[in-house]
Length: 143
Image (tube, rainbow, N blue to C red; front, side, top):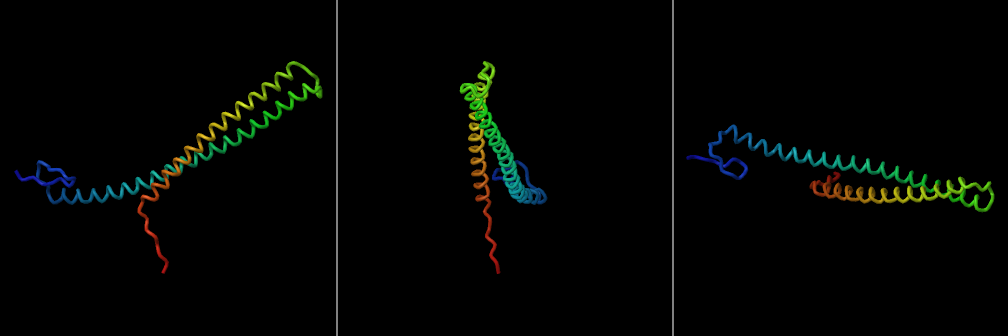
């Protein structure tokens, strides 16, 4: 039996023709080109994900500002009720306390989300940097 290697290091049970041998060589070159294209696509995907995470982080920062305002308004309302600056009514006291507590909870949630998003962004940025470093780029010299 006359067998040849199949171009992938293994033995095939059939004889390869010249045309199939050329196709195997061409496919190995296209695999190299495809993997480089996939590499670029993976980097582009990471950059898109980093962009989306950046937008989410900005939304968390805005939410934290809103939460601080709510805390301030709630505390001010509560203090004004206790000091007699405004008419003391049970509902005003409850609204002040509720606003303060809700603001604290909202702030904590937004801060936690921001920390999680920031950590994820750092991970993606590190992965992107590793991929770019692994691309074997050449320095172009000026003449």
